[in-house]
Length: 271
Image (cartoon, rainbow, N blue to C red; front, top):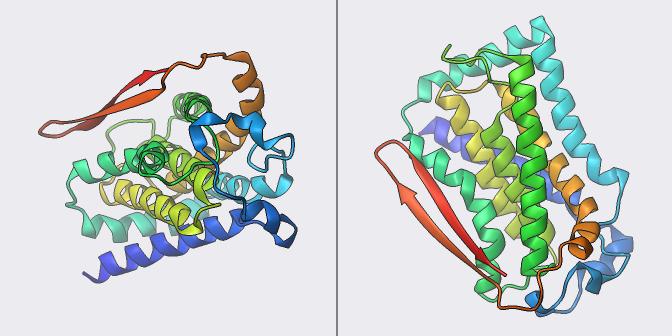
């Protein structure tokens, strides 16, 4: 029980830190208090060239880059691997036993909320089409490069099963969803973003308790996911203009699927 309390506290602290980094500064106050806009009638161009989500800013890269750098530093330094990765893993391995379905389901939670909240009447910053575009591009960039890195680095997992531990793709996927969730709904409430980051951080913690990843894998994976989202939003204006899907009715059907030791989501999109 003590471990669970510590893990929850850690997840919340990480989430608040991520969200505070993304909170607008005093100069952005007017942008932060934008009026409610009907989300699926407007594309990213409705916010103009000053759309904060798609505008480049070095400040946005500080936390993601720091996380990736921290993960790489710990992994590449023998003393840090021994005194951080292995010590943390030794402690977390005492608290294994969580069902695999928990982290597998949590991976999808932030990404699902990106669309579900809009259907529940909470206005997203961008249209349905643009949210699909940025989600798809971020996932392809983040998970594609993640797979290449795993293959090239070849780090053995804590349980000794495979050599594809660094960085954590589950954590990358979870933070892709959480970071988009924050960007799309923080004008409504920053706590929506906090919830996404809590879920994503929980995924990373669970991957470690299951002996599937080291701490440095998870930290680097989190930053990896956030960086891919920043690239996805930079590409969004171009993607939105290039990919014309017309004015037909837009819909998304989500079908959850579960097995004895697996979980997944099926998506059907109509534009």
